[in-house]
Image (cartoon, rainbow, N blue to C red):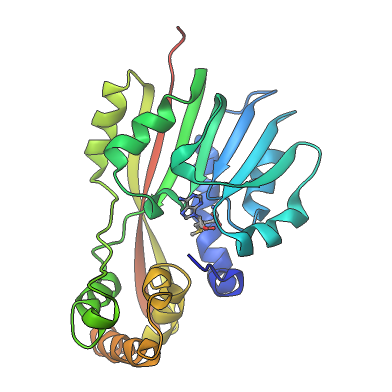
Length: 253
Ligand SMILES: C[S@@+](CC[C@H](N)C(=O)[O-])C[C@H]1O[C@@H](n2cnc3c(N)ncnc32)[C@H](O)[C@@H]1O
């Protein structure tokens, strides 16, 4: 997927707030072997690494564009690698992921498979956006289902893989996890107007649609722009952004 670091960074302050909430869930211990899944442009991976004494960390991402930016944050205790977050190998003391697992399907399989990669006393700490029922996301899916976009997209329409929070707790319970913590939090972002919501989703949810569209791209954006402006009139507007936090620890032997 062609990620655009500049577009993604347009709302950097708003996007980094949940990272710090996730970091607050991490059990700080020395000498941890850490992987940050979907590390993006790497500055938040650097913040994570700088909070963990003497850790050894890998930032993993699929996107060359993001990794090119991330390389500026590499150092003795942090390297960046290209790879798929659903296919990780090795054993880890901390598997961390901020705003990335929502891009991978089947969390009923993914969460146990990641949990299985933890060392004893290792921790899984994940944040995923769960705002798929916000009007902006509904408009996006609705428009992708309409012609001429349905044909231009070959019927592609992304169904959100993020589960209700109680399911994550159950999945982790069945993995034998300890200290299970799962909650949702709303980030009440105040944006200038509906155009700002469009700019926000252009950096994330719209990415897989825009990469599949060619000559219909502008028309697709214009239809969404129009629908958003009648659904979210006025200025400023509230963009209540729902996110899910998941943390759990692997028991000793
Ligand atoms: C919304 S960004 C989050 C970046 C960073 N964690 C942050 O908090 O700013 C999502 C990142 O996940 C990456 N990504 C999506 N699917 C992936 C996959 N299957 N494996 C690895 N990285 C993936 C994207 O390339 C992108 O950099």
